[in-house]
Amino acid sequence: MDVELKNINKRFGSYQAADAVSFSIPKGELVGLLGPSGSGKTTILRMIAGLETPDSGSIFIHGKKVNDLPAGGRGIGFVFQSYALFRYRTVYQNIAFGLEVQKREKAFIKKRVDELIHLIGLEGLENRRPYQLSGGQCQRVAFARALAPNPQLLLLDEPFAAIDAKVRKELRLWLKQTIHRVGVTSIFVTHDQEEAVEVADEIIIMNQGRIEQMGTPLDIYKNPATPFAARFIGEPIVLCEYGQLHGFATVPEYAHAVLRPEFVRVTKLEQELYPNAAEHAVVEEVLFRGSVLELRLQLGEIRFSAYRQLEDETVAVGETVSVLIYRLYLYNEQQVQLVENTSLKTEQTFVI
Image 1 (cartoon, helix red, strand yellow):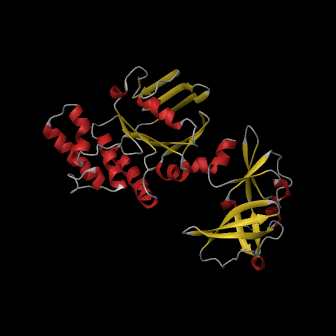
Image 2 (cartoon, rainbow, N blue to C red):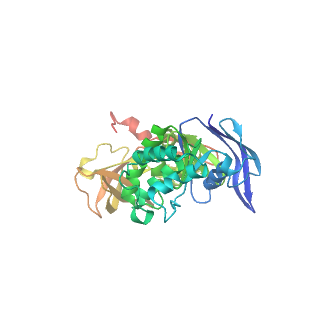
Image 3 (cartoon, rainbow, N blue to C red):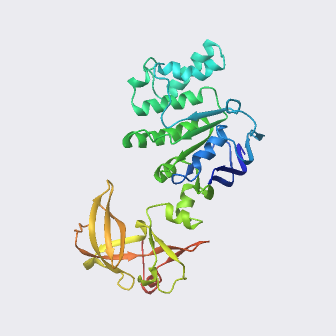
């Protein structure tokens, strides 16, 4: 394994930032540390970088224990969310900085910087300064500067946080493709699950200093392993009285249920296909989300969301519609279980 953490603990006063954290990352993989604010993800990143010291536990990079190595001796490149570029240095000079610190020959520096400028697609901008660049261009320069000394490991702390939404989406794909092209093992921190799902090969979900789940984005989304993961991933709402819903009265009894928008199918009343399983709900809001419409629905005391395709027949605010909830995640303090709407068994066919 390229990076390995074994039973890492770190406390700041009464705050347990890392609680027996252990994981390993294969060479060349891009891993996202995902979690809410205060979950410990940035502390983990900083301990790997050597900017914080664990209270206990071991950190290995390329099989070598690095707990006692200073940050400068770990062979790590670090990309900050604020770029941290030298304001009055040019693009070329910013990228060359780490190589100059290593006292590399000028010919080597020029060759390496030229390679990286081509890699980040900023040919012709070598002599510009950061204040003459866009946010996305600045982040590309920061990425190239971190890669210049050929680090063993690349760490990125909220790398897209300071960039506007449109550029952020473009940079996500660019970053993933570039890291895979370079082949450097990379870890990035984010609180944005959409970002983690789009960029990471594997995701580590953090909560209160502990790892909740680690796996591929698809596996974590489809198979949340803990109650926190079930509540955190996607756009869920939590239900207490789920037994009142059609088709869920006889499922196993758990404390709560999680309902995601994609677990709901909405049709107009005259188009209702599964009367034994469907509910009737009132449309409270219709929100345009670009490729889909989000419907905010009221079903008794329950408010939840569902998606509807743009080409589907229009539904209006205040209209009563047929709602088929065909799946829920049930959970208690220890486990999560996916259950299906039992009323569908009485229908002849159901196609999602």
